[in-house]
Structures are given as structure tokens and as C-alpha cells.
Length: 483
Image 1: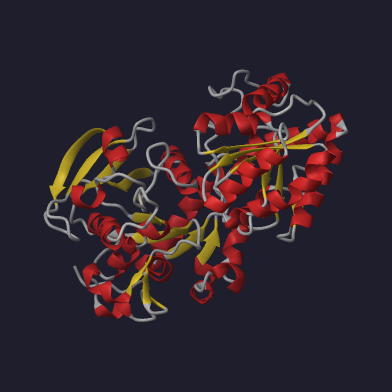
Image 2: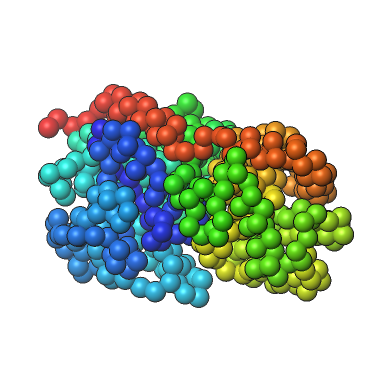
């Protein structure tokens, strides 16, 4: 089965969140399961610089405001998977992030930038870009790639089936409705039955409406986004798709995230030899400027610092938890108010609370390996990878019962789960963890149960291959133009 994955991010080249990790790990897992997999990425500078042996496939010419665009084909470093790159310097060659300028503002031409990505995917699927390889499945990831589903739906002869994965419903790719002419789609796509969403254009809706199958990154999140609380105004669209929406739980790259081989750790360990984790704990305390306290419950937070992640609950619980014997080590960046609040918490609780404002991949591994527990108190969480990294490293998760957190952590067996998005509920869960750690034998058993879980991409790859087959059947039943 020929499968094209379309995305704006891929670890380690461009990453703003878990999407990049998924796009880096799922395609190789599918290839290992027998699929013929390629990637399509925008020509952002870190991607162009890293892709190996890139050669031109076709000159696209002027497109979406760019005077010059072309399609390249190379190999991903590491996995060596074939990757197409849309090279359009006018749209992609710039400083800043993939979606935002250096000052944090959204790029004003994001509609053009990500419409082009989806448009090229549709042309690849229509045998119009690379005659040597034509996908049977186009798998679009999040709103940045969602327009591929609309462009394919607008070209009836295209036989390729489409799958759209929602990684986070909160980010929808909304643009002014009067810009619809820039997309080059039939006018029927600009109605409420198409991309129109409360007077705007929604790229997310393009995927939800026009993909042959819609997935989310955990079964529980697939149910949640059909509700008003978690659907962000698109819950009616989700309910309208019925059984065509499903959830497939993300895996983790168990080669990158493996405490027995992790190069970021001074001492490696596994479930049978935990001495390296204990020494890593003391090293982390020293590195972060925390008191070297063997009796403390050392809780790590590795997260974007946003209200979605529930980090205000952590801040609210600190005055009660620190005197009870809890240490908190934080790494992340995000909302200025939360960054400032964690800096202030450091000053108020010296030696007990430390925050590294920023992101460092090696430090993230050291935090997750060295801590006793990892907190993920999210208000909503489509899947969550951090709690799975914690399970893999014997670092007990403390999570809220939402999305993929509920699918991956079993209360009292592999971690501690709480329900209400409140400081009191989070504090109670941490206190349960603190009490549990006092029984060293029971705590070690909990760690080992988590470490024994199969969190690899193998299960997800098999589920996606089955979903692709269902999408192909659905596509085959769709009327298409002759020829």
C-alpha cells in the first residue's frame, strides 16, 4: 500500500509539539509493517538543510503568491524514508517558527503557505506530480495539511483515499472568509457544508468534512471531540461523521525513549536494574539546584506552559505540597504569565521548586528519567506523550482523566488519576503518590508495571493499515468521473 503522510512538522527538524514526534515515528512503523511510505513536508529551512540527496521532481512555477515553487525528492536523515519537499522560498524561507514570526505573531500568509502544501499533496495523488510514484492513501496531519482532503475531493478522478488525523482540535487554522478565492476551490466548498465556520474559513473543517476517514490520537479523545466541551465548535461536524471517526492511540519511539540505551543519561537502567535511575535522581537534583533529598517526592513537569496543560493547578498546589515533602522540577516555555509564575515559585520555595524556562531535549530526558513522578494535569489532552515517556522510564504519571491520559494510565496500578480540573483534585493525587512512595516495594512494583507496557508504534501501525483499507473501500464507493 502506497501511503503519503503530509505534515508541517517532523522531529527533530521542526517541532512545536507532539505532532512532530508522531510524524517522525509512525511512517517508519508503517514501513516496517510492509507499507510503501513517503512524506510530504514544506520547504522550511531546517528541513531543506537536513534532507539528504534532494533532487527536483517537477517545477511547479508560480503558485499561491510564490513566483517560484518546485517539488524535490530526497531521504529523511535517520529513517531514510523518501520525502517530498515543497520548495517555495517566498513562502517558507524565513526566520521564526513554522506558523509564527519571531515576535510570536501568526504569519499573515499562513493560508497560502499551508494551502500550497495540501494542493501539492492532491496533485501527487492525482498522478500529476510524480508519475513514478502515486499514493493510494493520503494521510494528512492536523489543520496544516487538511486542505489536501478538500483538493482531492474537488478532483473527482482522484482514486486515492484520504485520512485526516486531529492532533489537537484547539488549533483549527482559521482565516478570513473573503480570502477564499486564494484557494482555487469550487465555490461549493465555501458554504457551511464546506469550509465556512462562523464567518471564517476553517482548514480543520476541510479535513473533518472531506477526508474518507477521520482519526484522533486516542480512543477517548475521539469520543470527547464529539461533545460541546471538547469540540471547539466542531462537535456537530464530528457527530455528523458517525462511525467514520475513530481513535488510534499514539505510540512512542521506543528507540529514542529507552532508559537502557538513552545517550542523554549518565547512567542507564532498565526495569530489573534500577540503580541508574536512583543515581540519576540525585544528579537531577544537583543539576536543577534542588536539595538532594532522598525522602522527597520529586515531580517533573515537561510541558508547554499553557492553560490547556493545567499548570495553574500545579502552581496553586505548591504552598500545600512543598511543606508535605514534594519537590517540583519544571521545563517548558509558553504563556508569559505562567513563565513568570514559575520563576516566582522558585524564589518562594528555594531548593524545592526549580523551573527551566526553555526547551532542551537532553534535559527533558534527564528530567523524565530522574524524577519519581511526572505530572500531566491537562484540561484536555488529545493523547499525550509525556505520560508514556514517564511509564517507559519508571516515572509514575500523575494525570487528569481526559483524552489519551485516561487511555494510558491506570489509577493505582501504573499511576495516579484525578477527575476535576481543580487545585484540590491535583493536590490530592500528588498526596496519594507521596504516600505510596513510602512503601518502597509497592512503588517499585508500580514503576515496573508501567515499564512493562508495550508503548511502541507496532499496534498503531497495524490499526492504521486496517483503517487505510476501510478508507479505500469508502473511496471506491464514491462516484468519480470516467477516465
